[in-house]
Image (cartoon, rainbow, N blue to C red; front, side, top):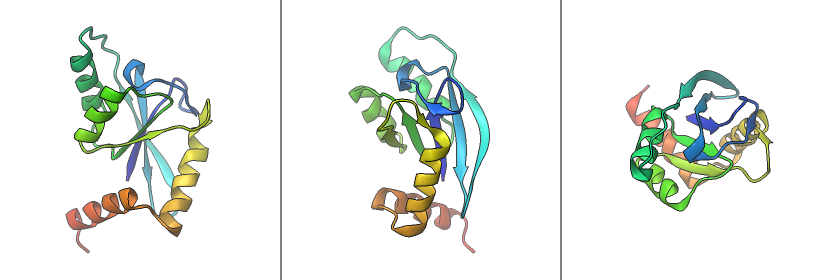
Length: 127
């Protein structure tokens, strides 16, 4: 499962989805998480719909996006593209704290939205 964080420093969830210039992509493994890469999204696009479509395209193969703020239109567009939206609950929430929380959730009692990603991954990679 891959999670893109809207961040200015790759330490905290501290950026608005629509204004984010760089998303940081992590992968949640069985018992750990790993940083994959920075997903640049530097283009300034005036038209709101085009800007949001561009930001979504920059997320590549993320399953989840986590931002400090995301507008209702952006949220609908992101969800419509098959990406789950998480909004950080605290100001400047640490990325590693969120990843550890998701890892604990994944390994204890994952919610249905999370189970959906596991099911999709296992159907693409049969053992």
